[in-house]
Length: 495
Image 1 (cartoon, rainbow, N blue to C red):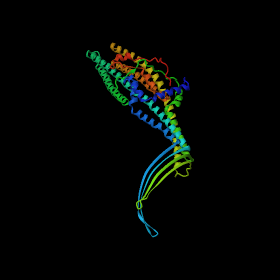
Image 2: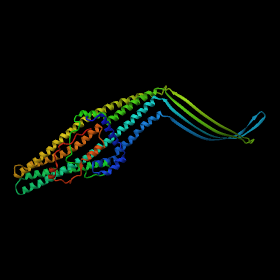
Image 3: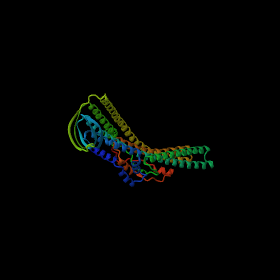
Image 4: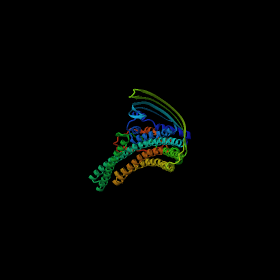
């Protein structure tokens, strides 16, 4: 890598900050871009894609894990208040000595009771590890949200350029159909004057029919691609902007896959999420193991009870009042030793250890998967570059071959089969050249996603390489003039 590790950290921090920007910011910027540009499509996807909305909600859920776990370390304060009224009537007689005493009394008791208590854990190792586990789970939620944001960018770019691919294929098939129709008309005219045999007419007719079938198929592919884009953005699109003719298709920088793999292992958000999951499971296992240990907490409580007791003897008319006020203040240090929980603690410890083993295996698998995908993606980008350059040359060669075949046919040294084959080769070369550029754009974005650097700025930078679409009804001559080669004069693409 040419940049320093500090620069990479700064770059990733900026990338993550852009990834996590509020939707309102994206909405405010949406008016600056047409909905038929890549930037406009991306901003619509930020607002309307149901997958990213689900990921955003899941991110908010994960952020509460840290706060929920921290609650086990903070003071727990409770308060209570009770107001009660008691009325009792007592009617009866009882004998004392030789006298009969009449008991006819009413009792009323009004009481106000309130209390407040505070419990502060002093030593609870299990709660401490649960807090650390919650912190890692929140970090994992943040990393997963970054993954979802990067996948949204990649899905937006893929859906957009798949529409361009389908449109390019349809454009080529329409141009081929138009050229073969003109070729068929010409062959028929020559047949009418006896210059060619009927077999030439049949050959030309077969080539034209195949071109019509290809054009119908490409029209269906374009409709499907547009529908997939509409699902992402929530609205219909037409006449998307296209890549400029001088769009540079160049090797990624650095050129070696080892540098990309090293960078991906450090910065890929799938690996980060798996690492946070592993660390959270480790702390969860230690929290479960710590449940065997005693806990110590400090408790403070204060209670105040006020009662007004009124007793009335109906037989004598005596009324007595007994006010009762009680205050209790308690300071206690509680030590709790778990002796036997029916096997729950031991089972929890074994279960948490198994969860940790699962997360360790998942982390190692993620690292291997990302490593393999990064190498494969880097190879694919290099292949795209080489293939694009080769296909650019193939466009030039097949164009010259087609012109030579047409001249030869006019002077009688070539037959119509040669011309049809040359036309097929030329339009296939044009189609393949345009598709290879689209493959390069998508594969480079996928490589950046694996490296952990794909961000909104990549969308806006690529958007600057788009131009408004020309007249979609291009003739064969238009395609021959429009297809060109790429000189690869721009600077390299860094992670």
